[in-house]
Picture 1 (cartoon, rainbow, N blue to C red):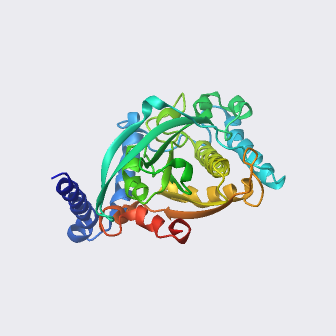
Picture 2: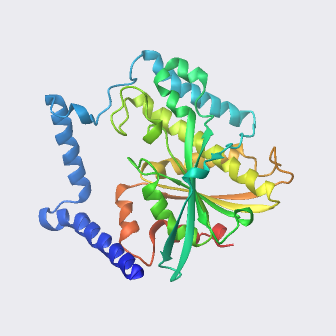
Picture 3: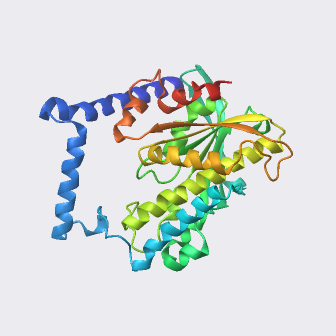
Length: 329
């Protein structure tokens, strides 16, 4: 009965998304993108009339408070550029896993037609994307200093033998871990360990002042969000390499994946990770050199969700990732 419920639930989501995706085109002759544009204009008109002040969608300007706040993203950018220019090696994320957050559950794999026991836990590490220098320009960003990350894996597999990893970045407004944890299950069933970080300005990392829900306060914040996210992915990539080296693996594979805004962050984050983790050199704590293959799987448009719910044979992101040569070996 549990299996039947899961399959019915999956088909229900597929049907609902099909209606949402095709109803505007069939009934109004317009696509979903046009609907979102209309909604945006309506919300902006409401903002001007003062009817939507609690949910401000648009930017306040270049910076939130002080003019020098724009120096914050410039400072982060300068630090990352200098690290690449000087051929530096990034520090691995020192993740402190919280035992009390550990959770186990049963999952039925559609692709493999069998049940697995999965496990997750949440940890935290210090982000090198933000420093005291940036906080002098904007003290409201002190919450960006620590990054929460969830790790999901199969309980019947020893993490010490795992050589396949995936970093899942969120879509716009994806606060917390629930949705990405749910989407990662089929991938984890294939034997991949998933790392799910919380991005800046989301959840516990919202700005201390001026931020409404997950919306950005200013154009400067958009830049800061991207740059700190890149730094977090670099730190997690170094963490993966350190883990492989610590368990005496000579090689491994990592895919950096995301949808919507996470999809746009994938490529620059992967490039920085490749440059700053030095695939051809020994890690600082490891005793051997690790050849880590880094791949990217990005869904940059909101309508990419069509791939998530339409076809259970594809099983969206998970199958695309597991079919990559680097994760298949």
